[in-house]
Image (cartoon, rainbow, N blue to C red; front, top):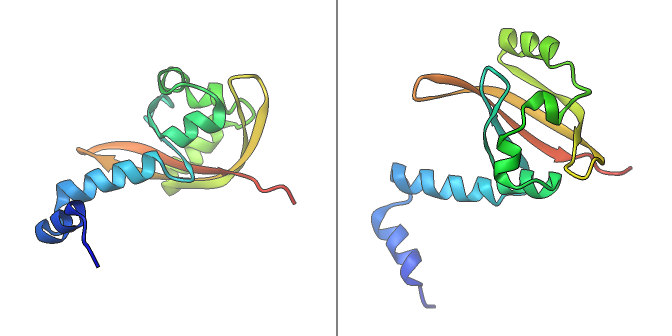
Length: 131
């Protein structure tokens, strides 16, 4: 059995190295099977993954220019934000607006996360399966 140079490098360096972990996690999330949205306290998108862009038909730049209110107009974000701020988490179903104007229902979960001491909300969402 042959081991590729990449596998040997990961084994030799140790996958637990923080930089390697951060890089692997970032690539896995960007190309993963769920939409990931990082939102600031002003409800503006700070980061989104490629699956979110593909699912909704926007480029990353276009999606980052939209607020969560613009993307989920049917969700009462003011009320939801108050609830989320008090419990630090939020979940359920909502409808998102795609670039072409169509709508897609997703299930989601949001949790507060801190990066460099600053609070953000990280939302993970996936399309609701047709029953």
